[in-house]
Image (cartoon, rainbow over all chains, first blue to last red; front, side, top):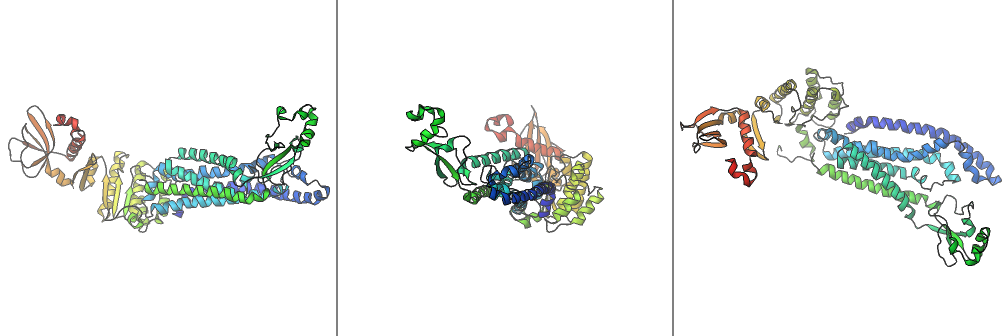
Length: 323
Length: 233
């Protein structure tokens, strides 16, 4: 069984290994240089109180590289499309499943061998890639500006979640292949479901894994250019909003007509001090940096459970349906 | 099948060989790859026999099977099915897509393999001449029912066409299909004994006509819907 799986998927494994090696070389070379810069910078900035400027120092000329690092977000999808979807769909399409199923191994063992290796490979590749990216981003994570590792986007390419996304994507591809028994519908479904679900969960579900914290700030925080006042590395979940003296939330801007009459008669430059004097303040909703790993665990758990459900579905489809 | 239920039983799977209609093979692998890989999936694999078979047929074992001709692929498929050393070999219209020469060669090598104390072979086909050449028994399935199940020699020996005046069929025959003209009846019938009634002419009939007679009868409206009963007789 293992030999068969290996011979049928050898080229995908080799291509993936080559791609991973290329990314590894790229990130190792630039990452080592960046770590050197960062440590040198840390030595001087503490005394000069300029550590917040570290980002511009670290990332002066790496636009392309940064894009490569963010592009690793698509790698789990590629696993799903090119490892997961063809795994069973190609067998059904070519009719070779009837060849495999009439050898002296049960369908159960055939499926366990085939799917097991693909899932294991996805987990392994996802882990290797995530480890590389997490390591590469260590200095930037530490500086935390402009994108802390908790932010949407940077959260998705490091830690545990890339492993879970990879396993899920491959399980999705396998399931779609077992359902449609044709390669193109399986790939299309994998693409649509993976992208849709990842977006929906990151955008609508992730902010609510734990109740966000609220921090009151002076109303001056609403003025453009004012520094954000959340603890470093936090994920700001919603926009800054203005809160009236009675607790009313005015959203991210107070309309002129809602301002107290006394303030409205003043010149625009006087509005903010006037509002502050009348008990207005602003507030920010955020997830603190300390919750990063809890969120990683929750999101990874969700995708692993979804992957398990898809594998159970595949199991049913393959073992109970006729050839 | 073979006294067991097919399914999740590796031992059972070991004892059947199967070749599906379009001869599925992993197109990018060579015949040699197939033989080596499947050796690990089967307990009684005879790799040497499969290699010898392919060598005897001049089929290159080191080229991807996708680049072989249809006849060669069918031979590779048959060699793999035989390499399992099955007790029963199931062939689902293996020759349907082959040219006449390849078909003849395939059936000849199949007959050879089955003759050497090989497996019992069930071969499904629409090509009756092929069946007549290589098979001993015939099972005719039509309209989801077994219409006929007997040795081919016996089928041919017991079926006759009877032509005579339009009247009740003679005693001792089972009519398979009756074609009535104004005065005359033409009956395809299975004979249980000699037809003694001199008003019937008895003619021998080939396997193909016998099978067609059964299939036409099974597919006729009389057996399908109630409304057409009158027309059928």
